[in-house]
Each structure stands twice: as C-alpha cells, then as structure tokens.
Image 1: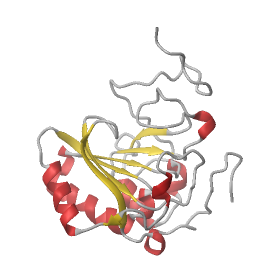
Image 2 (image 1 turned 90 degrees about the vertical axis):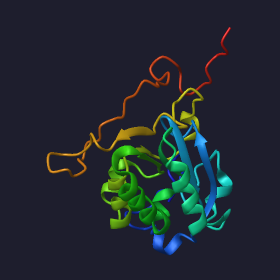
Image 3 (image 1 turned 45 degrees about the horizontal axis):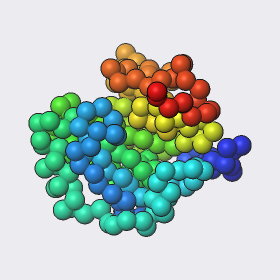
Image 4 (image 1 turned 120 degrees about the vertical axis):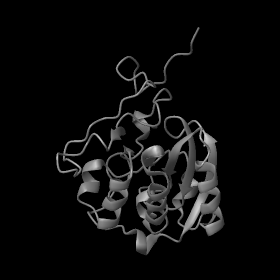
Length: 213
C-alpha cells in the first residue's frame, strides 16, 4: 500500500530479510564524513521496497544491485575500522533492516572487537515505533546500534541543509538515551544532539533556501 507521498508502507512483519535479501551490497565507502558524526566507514546494502519517490540511491532498491557481500570485504571493513581516527560504522541502503542476514553477524562482530569505542549508525525507512513492533531480527539489529535515522524520504519535505538526513520527517535518534531503567528501548525515543546542526526551525523545509550572498 502506498501513502499519499507515494511511499510503500508494509504491514508489521510483512517484509523479512531472510526472504528478501540476496546478500548484495551496493557500495562500501571508507573514511567519509557524510554518513554520521566523525570519520565513518559506510556500507551501502542493496534492496529497498519502500521505493520512496526521489530516492537519491534508486538503483540500490534492487536486492541484486551491486556485488555480493564477501568475507574479504568484511575483513577490509575491520581493517578500516581499526584506524584510530575512525569514529564508527554506518549502515546505509537500500534498506539495512532487510539485510539482517549480513548485518547482524557484522555488527555483533564489531561489538565483540571494539565494544563502545566505535559507534554504529543505521538509516532505515521504518520509523522507530514501527521497528519496536517488527520482527525479532530487525529489533535485534536496532538494539545493537547507537543511532538510528528513521523514516522514509519524503520528497516534499526535502531540504539540502539537513544534517545526516534528506527530509525533515526523518529523525536522528539516540538509541542509548532511548532506553528505560531495565535497558530496553522505550516507546518514546530521545533525539540525538551534537555540535553539528541543521537549520530546522529557521529555514523553510518546502522550498530551497536562498543562496548565500
């Protein structure tokens, strides 16, 4: 079913990574500054059925776009993450929550090797609230991450000045701060805060900002 913005909206549990994922990745970009805070190693997985109109990476909507994920690529990721100036791993798509056969073992290994020294950011078309009601593999992957950028890209809410997200409906959520006293993810998420800000609240998010003089 499509919503009024043309985004395909699944029923809870309708899409499952074990059935949809072909084990492909669209790209791997080490040492970049755009996918989260600090120097990042970014893995772009393949496959996304949300099919957001205006998606910047529409080719990666196919689950067989790119190349197979391999042990050699994983070793390269770990070699790159080992650099002291790298802040962490970013999981981008495609839809990472539907690549859990690849990403769950990877992120578990990252946690075993680096502990909290390297953070993990993940981008998803699901909202945080949807993920809390989703399949166990999606919930487990969410639990292993530090920050989630949630929600589909909505073209009419696009703005070029947003940090780490494409449209203003998307939220940057601090998963560590979103836990209750028992360590479980709480129903109400806590937004992430950092020194890097966008211009939300001061700039129209429907029309482009005027050029700087």
